[in-house]
Image (cartoon, rainbow, N blue to C red; front, side):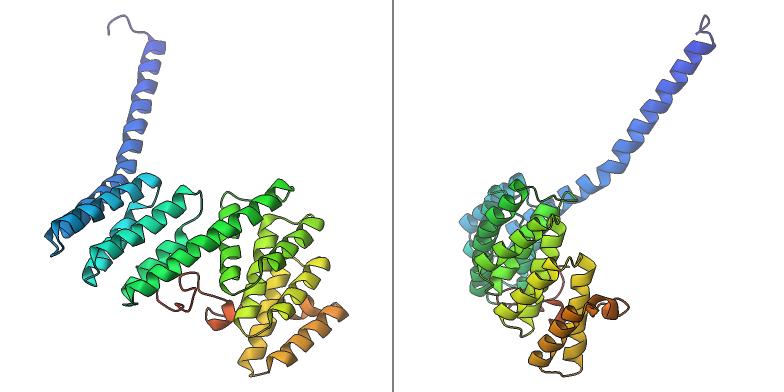
Length: 305
């Protein structure tokens, strides 16, 4: 441009850079979307090529579309369908897997526990009826857990990160799976609230209580230990230290009664956490609580992928 001065050139240059950055951003963002689309397309092809009846194929694809539209990750939808086909699962069961997750998601509930259970169960060849029973039970427990968490938040308990509320709902659901009564969980929330603790502390307290119960401590003992710890001002790290103390005792084949007595004594003396802070957290296994992908006797079913 003949009459363009330095300022015009600067503006045009800035505009060019802005457009370039925008184009690069779109380019970088495109692969994940394309990958998701390819995965779904591949899944559709797999369904169409399967020996399932025509109406079964149509039903599965319709449920898949509904699941993705409801917010279920397309990758999980693809995994559930392809693993089901690999296991020669009937169409009605595949539809049920997707429908349970979709219905749960529509209630505003986290669905990772359901998806992991379904995917891991299929990868291990768990009978489909058993997977369905566990996921349906889990869906109900998640629905029962949500009001407990919502009530605590309404009473002023703060969520320190975006996923804190959903994390707490899942933790409460796992506690219910271990037969920890709702009133015990609610009392745990009240104790955390009374000391102005966060939703993260509540989450850790319930998880520690569940871990204790999962490893042989009675519900009453587990609740008493955790409630006492919260009342004493224990932090999330301190509660983890209590889990390490129990894990150490179990590794040394000590009876649970002795572990409980020792923990109680150390808490009374005020050096429970100081004595345990330097010990490493136990590796995953039965001592680290219930497997989030394996509630209801389906633990240890392996990873998602």
